[in-house]
Amino acid sequence: MLKSLIMAAVSAANVSGADVASAADVISRTDAVTSASDIAAAASSGPSFGLVLLGIIVAGILTENYVLAQFLGCCPFLGVSKKLNTAVGMSAAVIFVMILATLVTFPIYALLDSVGLGYLQTLVFILVIAALVQLVEIVLKKYIPALHKSLGVYLPLITTNCAVLGVTLNVVESYFGTAGYESFGKGYLAAIIAALGAGLGFLVAMVLFAGVRGRLEQSDIPESLKGLPITLVAASIVALSFMGFSGIVQGLGLA
Image (cartoon, rainbow, N blue to C red; front, side):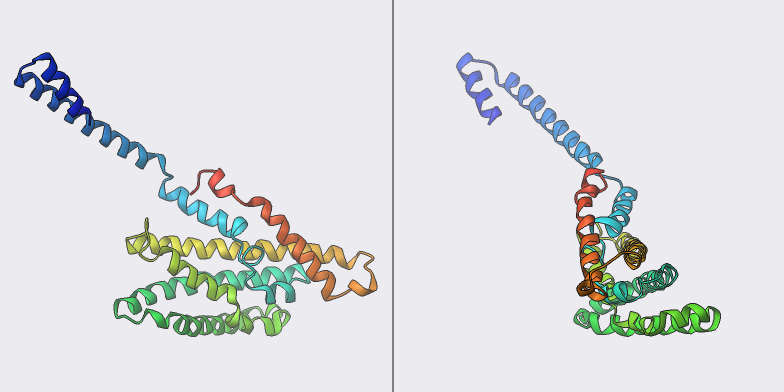
């Protein structure tokens, strides 16, 4: 458009063709430099990959907490949070299973996808998680029998803990072949960091709620609210408090 206006003005002023060609060449080069500088500025304005990984961890703990924001894994959250030591022990087991399950299932999905069997991911992931939970149970039973006994039935129930399965499925959807994670290495690293953030978020939720339930035991609670009712009310209030962290990742420039 700018070139057309110049050509019209030139023809009206009776300027030579050589001058017109020179002016057009200068405009083209200026446009090219401006475009290149705009692209470079846009690329540099985004957060580095390290900050993106930090944002993933912060989101997993606060804004996208699997228990308090996505309401996954509520069974162990309510069942094993009566005492702080059992809450920490369960959280440590869940963190280990989440990270190890992601380490194993992410490349397995890449293999399934390469042969057109990606639709089997849920079935395969459940089998992998079940095997890992059995490994954790064997280790705890042999080396930390007190913790194994205190966790009771909730330890093997990690197999059906929807938070663990949710992590493995979500990281595949978010970081496998998506924009910004086209390379397998970057996506794989982001998936592992996301599993770590989700596990830390589970730990934070369990420890916080164990403290809340400890205070509840020392409180004068109406008879009609004792037990499960007051536990659910307290859990909903803790979940509502985490809504105050919404937007923190974008606000800190981590995404």
